[in-house]
Structures are given as structure tokens and as C-alpha cells.
Length: 195
Length: 203
Image (cartoon, rainbow over all chains, first blue to last red):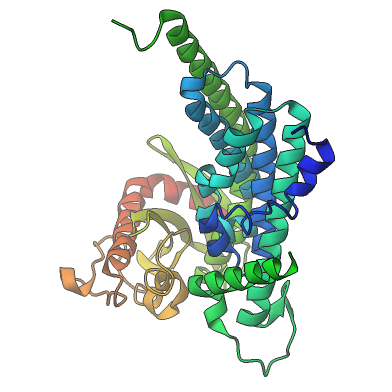
């Protein structure tokens, strides 16, 4: 069962890539991926929280009493989420305005709590770091891909730059929540084709 | 009878949770203090700044640079001065009302001579896009407030006032009116200090 550190890292990039493989944390995925920039911002914020909470949960795993572990995890996760929120407000205010409500919602993102519970609380520091980074980067890549596809189809731009020129009629369905579901489903379908 | 928790375990749980929570609280309090000034600067630049520039359009100075603070009870309020025709006769300041999705910030500019509202602009809000958010996005809504006396309460037509509410967003429209009315209360309360400070700009 012993996996190498590299394996722990790379599993988050394909085999267990969220939200496609671990179909968790869909709420922010559907909400923020209207543009690629938002997707990347959200992904990086989640990666930071995931990495820090994994490190701390793993380091404290022998101290945290099992009966109150969820409460402890939530305190740790909530702390890092507020750190992200304050730092983003102070240094990336336009991004904060776009993501707004979804930043505090990282607290209840199942991926973060899921990794703390399923992985970091049972494994050592190094594998936990690898796991947090892998899952986080995987999540960022997914959000960027989803945001990119939705942005190109929904508003006709790619990372803010116009793709099709002014004559393009935006396919606004794609930037609404149902469009996100359809897009997510199709991408998962394509991923399964490659398996 | 078997006890649910033994004493040792109980103490450990309480201690771990307390230490964790205290540590987290301390860290966040520190970070909040550390970033407060920078956050205020960013809000000025991205949210309040454009709003102030819009409602004080045509001022010969930079209202964001020419600002001062007055202590109102426990809270410090920022006032932004607009100079028109060589005279500092207009101030803009922020008040708030309770919207549909939380607090709604409103920047109100008042002419100190006529005591009339020069312009309003919604700054921070969490209203529904397309409905309540129209209070910020639709200039026609904000334009209605121009010329109202700052000393009288502002109300929507349903409540016997003169403001046409945004259709489908009565709560938001009321919140904007409430914020404008509150701005009037603040203005009346701080009028002596305000005219004192303004004199410095007219020297």
C-alpha cells in the first residue's frame, strides 16, 4: 500500500483529479468558472488552504482527539480561509470582488475537509504535503480548463482577450450554472474516453 | 454503568480545542490589524474611489486626496471634499442600509450651502444580479435622489416618498433610501465639526 511521494502528488493530477474524479466541491466549481481568470484565482486560493490545512492536520494528527477531530479540522481550515480572504482583499481586490462570496465558502468545500479527514489525519507530513499540492494543482487545472471553455463559448474571450472578433454572438447559456453542469459532464465524458 | 467520556479524554479535548481556537484567533487578529490599512486603500481605489469621482464629477480637486475624518461616537467617518467654482462646498461620505443580501454601502454627496443631495452611488453590496444590483448598475435609479433635501427622510413611492423603486427589488430600493436618510442624520449630527473642517479648505 505504501505509495511514493511522487505517486501521492501525481494522483491529484489525473487519477483522482477534482472535481472530475472526486466529484466533490461542485458549488464553487459551478459558481466561479465563468472566466479562466476566476477559475485560476479560486483554484490557487483553494490550493493554499488545502496545502496549509493538510500540513497542520498531519502535524497535529497525534494530538487531536479523535472525538473532536472534525471541529479541530474546521478551525484549522477556517483560519486559513480567512487568511486567504484578508490577503486577497489587501493585494488582489478586483479578484476578491469577482470571487466574493465563494472565498468564505472554501471552508465548507468538501475537498479540503475530505483530504484532511481521509488523508492528512492518517499520513505523515511529506505525503500530506504532496497530496495537498497534487489535489490543489489538479483542482486549479480543472477550474482553469472549465473556466477557459466556458469563457471562450460564453463570452468569446480567452483570458480576457477576444478570440472570435466583434461579430461573435456569445453563447450565454455557457456562463450560467446549467451550462457549467453540461460543460463539466462533457469534459468528464471526454476524460473517460481516454481511459 | 459505562461513562461516555473518561475524565482524561475530556480534559484533553477541551484543552486541544481551546488552544487551537485561541491560536487561530490570535493569528487572525494580528493579520487583520496588519492588512486593515492596505484593505482600506484598495477599497478606496476600486470601490469608493470610482463612486466618489462619479458623484463629485467636475470638482477641480482630487476628492480622494482631500479627505478628512471625523469621530462620530465610536466610529470614524471619512469625508471627501469636492471643490466647485473655487469653493469647497460639497462633501461625500458613506452610509449604509440593510439590503436583501446584507449591508449595502452608499456614497452620498451633499452640497453644504443648499443642503441638497448632489448625487448618490452604491458602493459595496451583495444584492441579486439583475434585480437589487441594478441599484448600482442603473444610473437612472441613483439620478432620482439628486436634489432631495438632506434634512428630510427619503422614501420609496410605496411608503409615501418620491423614489420609484426598482421593480422586483423593493427591499434594495428601501435600503438605499434608508442609507440616504441615515446620511442625513449623520450630516445633522456632525454639521458643526464639518463646517469647521471645511473652513480649512476655503482659506
